[in-house]
Image 1: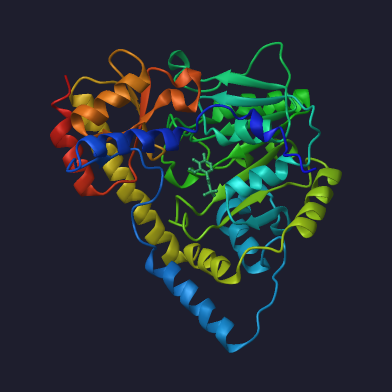
Image 2: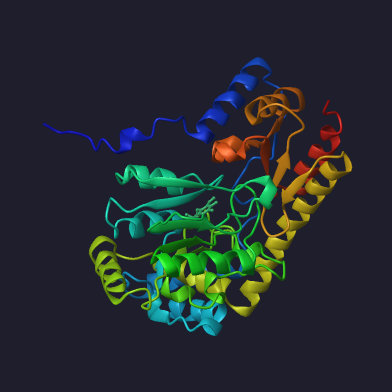
Length: 387
Ligand code: PLP
């Protein structure tokens, strides 16, 4: 008889986004002409940059001219080498330590497999819900939440008297938009070194960082290459959510056996990422491609600045926005689901209730700057009617 993996059935909470979709559908059922102002979206709203399109076209043409079979499971050398040149040259990371994939989510699930089920896992609260969910789906039972609270500017504080084996850090954090400073991250690297933990550092939004006191890579911190695996994506910084491309850095210095089983895992369980998408990634990292993608990020940042300013002018407190596409809005009263309902039903604004990312997100709302100028204009028009 077939039996299903019972670990998957342990995810009992209703997933955030379907619940929001249900509420939107209910509203549109009552008011079919309602024009929703979607500020909840965590997906890009601009088309691919011209260099990226060119890279895809060239690769498609090449593939029509000669046979192209399987590529290397770890990714083509041309892309791994360029990633090192652009992102990691200064930190002693080698191209053989960079592994190309279809994106961070797949990489997180893959890396997760390398570690024993009984490992003690730490995840931030609030944070990207995937870390906790994939841990539960993998049968992990020892999961501790690290609160990120207003009192500490939503930065995760290193716990005293506790040890973890695997630590998920996300910087800039989704949903708070708050990025870890050099000092904060140094403490975590030190903690991991003392306790012999491994840090999974999700830097999906590294391309948005502008603050001088915020590292883009964990390897900017001395000794991090002995304890940290970094995850990066082309999704948000180059608009690849629909193309799918990312990579992780698995330094040999963490341990030779960890590196070796990762290579074994990748060679056994994947057949690599498609050639045209890797070529498009290379184009995004060309001089011209970097300029075009940076301009797109800048444009999202401009929307974020306007959203934040319009809320602050109304007397609200907001965090994030600066180094990330998310604005973390402190609600004046009540809980974040009630406030979500109020925004949706009274102003037709779709936002994300902070509590959907963890209990410590209660009292806040996440707004996204992945929106068009027209959406921001509508938001500005209606937000002043908030009572
Ligand atoms: N990590 C974080 C923090 C995210 O917010 C997201 C997407 O929203 C991802 C990873 C997913 O990245 P990818 O598209 O590379 O799978």
